[in-house]
Image (cartoon, rainbow, N blue to C red; front, top):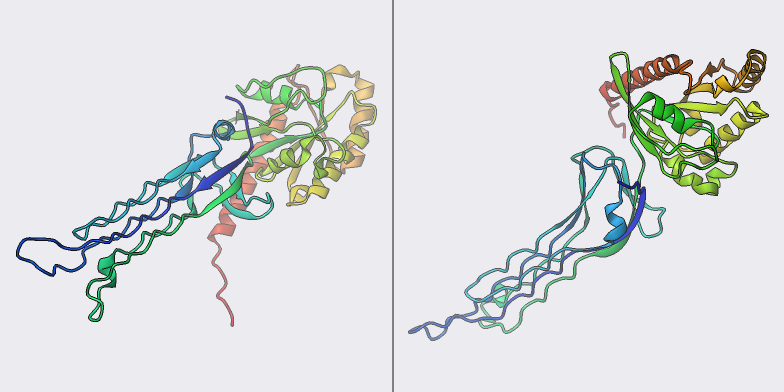
Length: 346
């Protein structure tokens, strides 16, 4: 299945049915009076978050969604049936934006959440509704109201426990393939990965979801290399594993480039817990390895892990480090959700 993390769709709620102008006509009843029924309400457009989806690919091929109109009212005081709703199913982590692609309408993080994004129009009143002591035979009825219509953007931000970040060709996809059953495309050139990949990783008795984010380049926070779309997927991660290519000429510069992009993008990315690792160390001799590790440690102000997805060196150490940080983040979230809210003070 192809991965698609952004889609633009047009939605239209159903129009309300028109009210009916009708009069009771029966034998032996000379003045039966009005009996026109009300029109039915138009269907709503609902966006629902479901658990078995992880892409917005369905909305590349279908971009128009229209709910059914309400049925007009009928004689004998029969109201028209309401129009059927349209349900748009999206994966967890989907944000809904207005047509300007900046105004956030809703953020559906968990399966089971839903929102009525466009309301159907109310049905019109039949002429029986307008009967009064002074107007016992009204000959008018209301038309149904129009349903809401708009264009919206669906933007998916992956919900993963940990995310892999780094410059292009830093070994992120190779690491994901080595620790999970995911099969991302791997090649010896930048931007091999064009879409995020997810993999379920097992470390000891703990399972967690790891996201491989396409490589970031300088100016990513401004959209260079589709950076703004890629950085959005890191927002949901509890911890970041920052891979720096050991074969690079300046590992410190590579590290600072990615950190600058995370900070410039904002949304708390620069404050997330970060584990720094020097990847592809199997390609270096012992002396070069120590020099590169020391340079990276000075830039990151923390001792980096030494990794090789090919030889397996340092893989388990990195996984258990990720597991520890994910566990700590979960405990913090539990404490925050359990803490009572302070009463409002006027």
